[in-house]
Amino acid sequence: MSQPPLLSDDARRAALAKAAEARRVRSELKQLLKMGSVSFPELLEKADADEIIGRTKVLAVLESMPGVGKVKARRPMESIGIAENRRVRGLGAKQREELLDIFGG
Image 1 (cartoon, rainbow, N blue to C red):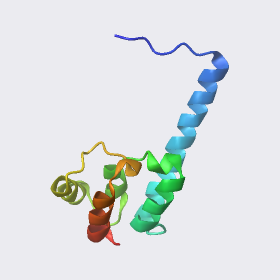
Image 2: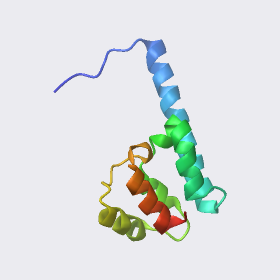
Image 3: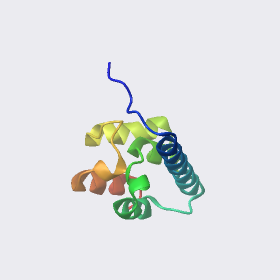
Image 4: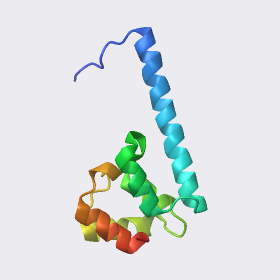
């Protein structure tokens, strides 16, 4: 098994801070989706420009939408052929189009 990279204390602190910021942004994004302040099409637009949003898993985004739970999020993903670990930025044009048809586009 390979060892994690050896980092200096400063590099480790910077990496931890970056990871904490990414978690905070993703949490806020999911909260905004849940409240309806951000729509799914808006999120897809933002994902192209924002690296943190682009790295958010599609399943987590869909489950955060009002009225969409685990089952309602997974079924369309399976029918479209999107893996559960797919990230927003990794969606193809056809996959985005089909998700927008289902979840408000």
